Image (cartoon, rainbow, N blue to C red; front, side, top):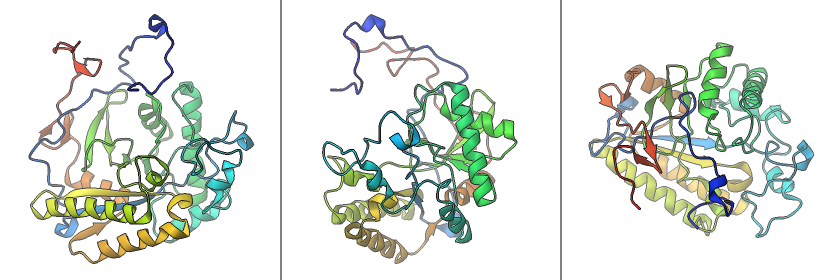
Length: 329
């Protein structure tokens, strides 16, 4: 099944897509192209590695928060169970940063970059824009109160078609700096995007779903901790080799407390950290450090992924095809 939705039998009832200049962004199917782009990482590093802990516990779908149902995603028992809350509680005890502020305070004390993963880890696709904006504002205020400053970066994961524009809109209204967002899976390098609604740059600092421990919980993912380690090692080796050949890249390792924190899996994380530490010319950095480097080294130019690198866009598309091309039947 190529369409992951329950479509009505009468397709004439489905509203056709209409371009919205405020919320929609042209696709770029070219990116940096075959010659790639050298981000000139500090110290001549061949690769930048960013470890990301997605802290979702307590913010997921749960009847305890007044939701209609509890979370059904990434449950480790086939078919799900009525007590999935306890699955998400493992490794967090007892919830998202608002309910467990010690996590935020400890993160700041230990020099970590506290970014936003949205106020609730729920689906935003059908949420009215004003309600979504209220959630965005609440998240900024919550992190600022607990951690001492608002989040400098943002990653939704379950965003609506309006989310990226709304995030930048709220940050501008609150006069708070936003250095990066990570709701892109399109490249192994950061890049600039023109923010159509606000005419300000939108810096994407990638969060890749590839090296992500959530794959322990999907049929096509990791069958064991060894698979997790092997996959991350292979990804690192490939990108490191490209960096040694003159095209440094960025690698994200995405983690969840309730997933990689299981005793039988944590060994694999320790081993990949030790392996990366054994290599020379590796920059392990926060996303804000990466964003600050890229912003200083390669300041925004309208219409460019990086200075001098024009973005190829298809402003009008039909079924994902540029308007000037005939859509295959």
